Length: 549
Image (tube, rainbow, N blue to C red; front, side):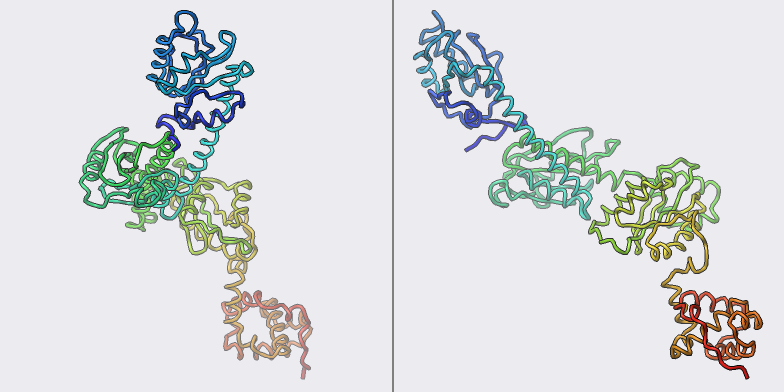
């Protein structure tokens, strides 16, 4: 059975792993059963008693100087080995030459007596080479552990961006660490829980968080939630996988306790596992702070406007001043800075990202450096202090989105700015290109957009559009030409190449078909706009000319 690394260690290398990397000339003279012991270090020493300077789990190397002369008696050698075993030395390596040509028999006997692993180090293998090989192997193992930690931390942070961040975070944690885990709110109620299937081979052996009403858990939570400052609460429950129970408080920036994370395991965690737990605690604290005591400005601003929507138009100067302060905080802007309304729509040829709403909101918050972001039926809307330069616009477009970038405004102008942005959104959808309100060429057709324009044309011109093609083309051409000349009979007859009486007669027919008063300026305006959204066959081809009588 392989030993677990110490709780204070990161990576570790066992004696067997280390010996497997050394030349085969190194010989094991006595196996004391320490092959699975984690080595802390390789230490050459020629002291008669090196134990005051040793740590647990070291490999001691000696060339035999402590055993020369009177110190080489069986009793003195046995006492030397006994001290090494008491100091929890993992093994003793004896180097041949320059003092001895063979390992003293007294040393071999003493190692057998006290069961200390004894190695014969040949002259061809310098002590320095053994130390360097151990350093290289330990560094390689630590690098592997660091890679695993980095990957685990990335997964934990990715879980925070899911639609159920606390549940996903605990589920990710217990996949990497053999624990059960439960997150609690400040009221002591469970917010999320998970257990590891790896703690002992099955989920049952690994244990699970105690159910509500568990006396031990209730006492632990009471201590956690009532305390203050950085701390841990330790306990042990008489259930599988709960020999070690550790409670971590989730604290606000001002040391208010916002909740707790409680973990249970069958034995103490390793340093690497504790590192992952620390990351999870930090992320849970971040979620708790965002949920309760995070940036208060957006919630205060929303509450004020929801309860008093007329405050922007009729509020007192003091109310408006307070809202301006909240808006500046939420947008990360100065109190007098201009703000812009951003509306985002997905490009026609882009694919859905599949991101959760939380991840999507956080993405736009990051890109536009603002907390004022909302997901909408058309995409998203944001209020930002940024001017949205070409670099930021390009980054958003690479994500498959197109923007309407509003013109600069202040608090009381935001509603009108949003209306201007909304008016241009259909143009962005039609063209597939982002647009800035400041640079837009304003026109009725441009603002109306192709979909609404086609609907208008269908409704207004339906009697004409339902005619046979030849008849439809002729009448639509006359109507277009007549409206283009502002209803002038002579000018339209000249432009169309028809007799004025023919123009008058056909306009009369059109008025009857449409059941509309063509002398009305409003009717003419609607017809002219509707014509912009019909096929241009009537304009492109010369209309049929009825014979004048």
